[in-house]
Image 1 (tube, rainbow, N blue to C red):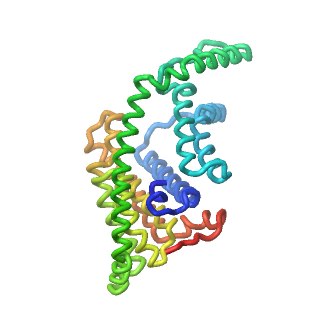
Image 2: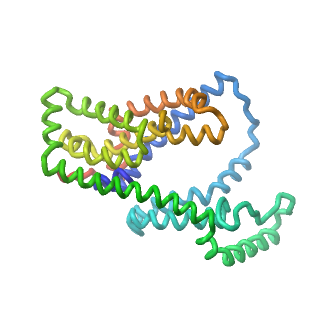
Image 3: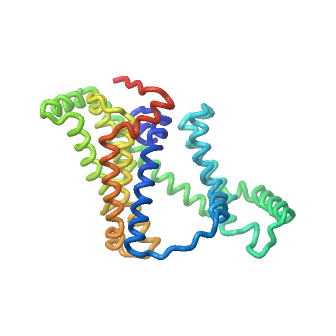
Length: 315
């Protein structure tokens, strides 16, 4: 969505363009995990049956519905991508406070205890208890200390991104008026680089920048710069966007500023050096995935073209 906002590309196409690459990345990482587990002889738990799978699915149902609401609302024409963000925020607030109770005034409280029998009467009573709690605490949840802190933290990030977006739009205007993308394109073609050389340069630029900058900010700055050049070279905008998003994913696990590395180190109580060493094999898998996505555009463009028709680019 950040790339789409920075380049005026269809958000719906970007969502569809990420489906197949996302499944591929997940599959490659799962294969890597299986190989690593077999090679290191990691312990495994016995399969508890499909009941366990069903219970896990039911537990994740409300979180997964967020994806259904966003995509269904956009593709169903119920609301625009901008409105989808607001709907998703309200839905996530309600689910986090009153379903999963990860935050807010009811944090940690459970409707049913483990020793209660699971009968229809118990479930009906639990539902009415939950309904009463929700009605009582719905409005107080908006001013709860933990929720306010979350809103303030989100506001800080949003304000930072808005400043970056404003300056990126100014940069985009200057580049367009001075015909700098066209000049760079002519120089690249004159040097014999073409599409392949340009994609390599973009990947290198993003991989280096991703080591030191926050992904969304970097994407907002770089996308308006490289997008016009890519259009002059005939590169599909969805393909370029997915490639840039994959670079941002790699930046999240690349030192020294890889956010996911710090999160993992804090959760696992490990030193940063050990986390970096442990992440190295998965970084290699993501690099391989980046190469595949970069030089096989159909992975990103086939589904959007199938579902929404060919992309119409106005230069």
